[in-house]
Length: 252
Image (cartoon, rainbow, N blue to C red; front, side, top):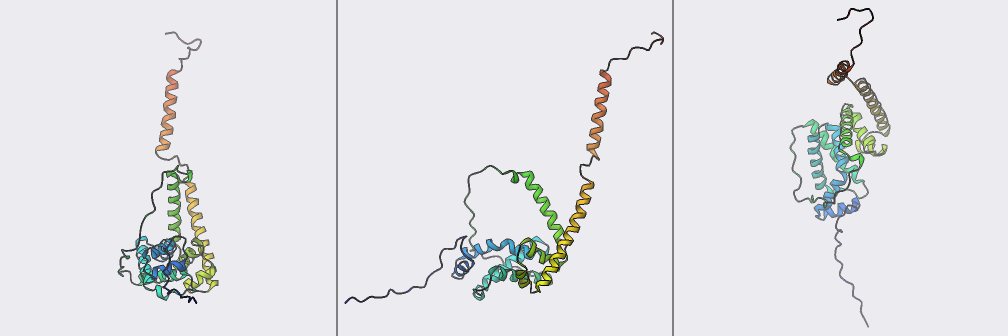
């Protein structure tokens, strides 16, 4: 009689993290000691967290410090993350609290990120033709427009700016923004509506001022046009044959 033996069970180790891995898989891998998994989490949510903190601190360097510290806090607290929670919401809460704390204590020190985190870059690819929208002049124009928009967003009152960044820029739902900021959904809607109105008013004023200066011919351009025309008239005058003397006029 053959006796079936059960193979000894061994604890399953998380699969190698990949960009397509779910948040739950990346968290499990990170808790198992895979720094690369936490690096993928950061790359996935860097923009969201940066924009969230930037809406509060209004300074790129301070925002970067706040995001780094928030990630460190998240790393230390991974074991407390609930499986039924949304990772993005959890991270935003951490970075918002960190940013608000820095407003109260601007001289807080920031610890460096774990040096063991994987930061491998993507392999180099063969050069390809540059699309028209990515030509240098188009990129410069887009950068200028983006900087102008960011400057206008920075002028929004604090309570409106954070709601606008999460709802308008990151396209989070009203429910998600309310949960993250711990405010009623009606407040999210009203603040977002007011923020959009203030932005429209500010951008409209900027547009009116810009239109008044469009295609301006003042300064060197105006001088150049006048000088060119006068030079052409002078040359034409020299090339024109002399007019015959009028009848009855004295001869030389």
